[in-house]
Image (cartoon, rainbow, N blue to C red; front, side, top):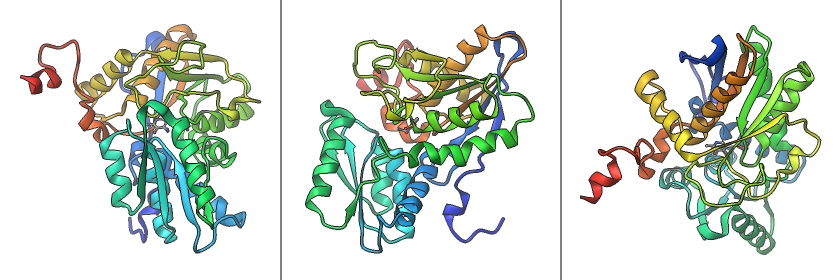
Length: 316
Ligand code: PMP
């Protein structure tokens, strides 16, 4: 395969029929988004947001792009802005992984950290403040820009329909900005109104009405209801504790040679729960947004219940 830009590799990722024991002989299919060139599903978003901003006349040759991000969107945006030679400032709460922030810098973006305690809301406020000070700047604002769900509606969702020669009984995906879930759920429901849609959050996120608190699962979890959920039919919200998500992260590597991040682990734990409740031989589709490799500094494979856990070993 001859290509002329790394960005040609964005999208058209594989859909894996997971070789695991699924309740009631059902199948779980996972879209392997870590195979995008920037390592996550957010390469699609970065490309779409920049193309959309240019098309709408909001981005010129000299515009500075400013965006609040948990990291993967920053990497996707930096890949896209590098191609267009646009200066880029990414506002990232300090809690997000060292690897993601290092990759954003490597691509040429400037990182501004906001206090971890102020969460993504703190990063959003800081991005707006910077944009107000900087003439000819543009904040794509993934948390409210309709181009966010549109990215997945127009790219990933049709790929699922093309890849899978079966009726999709349930679609299960995590929510951070909610763009992935909203865009794909809308498309799939238009194709088949019987497809159940299940949104996944970590314990500590507010969708199910539980109290907000910190969680280890990275990339999903919301501090406010995503505006993209307004006109959407959401059949269920599943809240997955960190322990259940990380157990799936370890199992996928140990048994199936697949490196998945913790939001993928949560999506898999939720998909297994959905399979338990659906009729036999159901087809469940989920999304694995990124790989474990960008969470090594956070000891992603460390089992806190194990005697040989890395953090215990390193503290000896
Ligand atoms: N998983 C990971 C690893 C992510 O970085 C993100 C984006 N924050 C998501 C899931 C959730 O995607 P979305 O923002 O589209 O809800």
